[in-house]
Image (cartoon, rainbow, N blue to C red; front, side, top):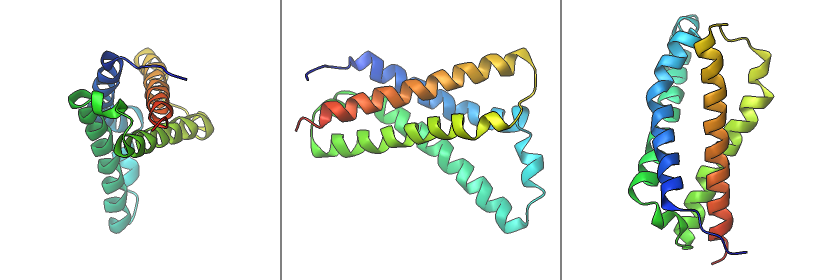
Length: 142
């Protein structure tokens, strides 16, 4: 099966990933009151939680930069393109699976902005998972 994902779709995904990285602190603070919850942990666990939060933010930002700066290389069917799109695709598939498996158990504040935002973020996560999975499948044809 031969198909091509246009560079503009990959770049749009990259912009979306950078957006998720930039909005992440706002969501943690305003929607989930994350910082007050983290303060209840032991100091070492606080630092571990903050570190993992930064990892997530950094990965989202870096994946976005890669998509924006070198979209053609993500679909050039090299072993590196296969490995990278597989990694990023698995990352977003895992995020979507986690989002729908665990997060529905929790309530977010009822503000309309947060409700709309949750639909928007879920759309983005699904979009990223689809784009990178398709890129991975495309790159399998080495």
